[in-house]
Length: 252
Image (cartoon, rainbow, N blue to C red; front, side):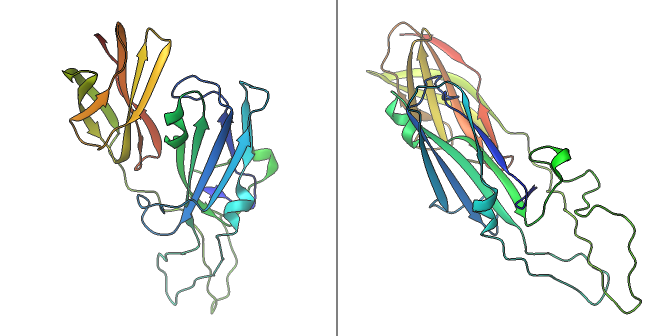
């Protein structure tokens, strides 16, 4: 859980994590929504494009707290008896980075995707950046309170998410169909919106292709000869993490 009244920083490397190519620019897309975690909006709430004019290979740090804070309208909730109340004052935030490199497919391939829940709260500077909720899930700093006998006190807490399956991608075979077309057989565990096939030829040439589906099997174009490494990349929506499969080496 992130607090929007304190900095929420994102570190964006200028070298594409997927291909190792230095970008000429990157685009950060931010989506903010209420409801089901696995149903982000199709259109970005904000997007920001930054050019890499010096061909730097470093990392940019972006603070998005003020942007996402605009989506929170705090409405206090209460109840006449002791109960667990849905505060309704939180939102989901998904951030993705799109790179412009010599590999044109990267401009439409999201990377470094991350999903967090945000609230209109703050942390202290000595706690460090992007401070998470304490282990006791208490969103205020004290544990004892004085309350009127006829009053109501609302204690804000974070309810843990239900346990999810550990995501994985297991690539089992890469088989020639005809020409440069191959079938990829794999076993996906998790929740994926898209999957990408990634091919390297002797560690020099690279080819990234978004597959047409997220279930096995899928076809992919491999326009190389010689020793080729093939793997699959995906973003698991349930855990908000990038997943990379094992590598299969084939000789063409």
